[in-house]
Length: 173
Image (cartoon, rainbow, N blue to C red):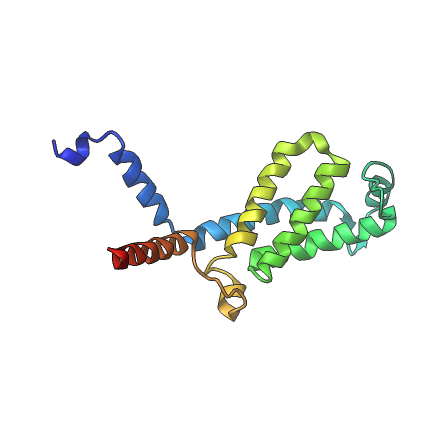
């Protein structure tokens, strides 16, 4: 048995190092696709062909009634936002802005419509916050078009920060 294998925390260190090597391109893609699927499915229930469904007008007037926005305006805005922002997330186009828009919708839904669904909304918010913080990843139009200036994964950013700290500590000794 090697000295490292006797260390009970060595497995955890190795596992964490493996996790740091997961490509953020795949992580970012998952962070974009799953919330987009939820909001797209919701958007599709709001329309009948190319028109807003009668049930949508009813729901926004009676069940989703918001205190500051007229129900008709809220119905149109929500329907458009869910369609457009979901597609933008899937494509990885204007990802941070799209995630912010859907996060805002999530907070409105949580606060005014379904406050008891905080666990579901928390999961959506976590994905959207990660996208706002870390960006869409390399598998995105933002990356292809050079629209996301920080196309580095969290692990790469953390690694660069660690190397920088090690260099500065080494120069002091």
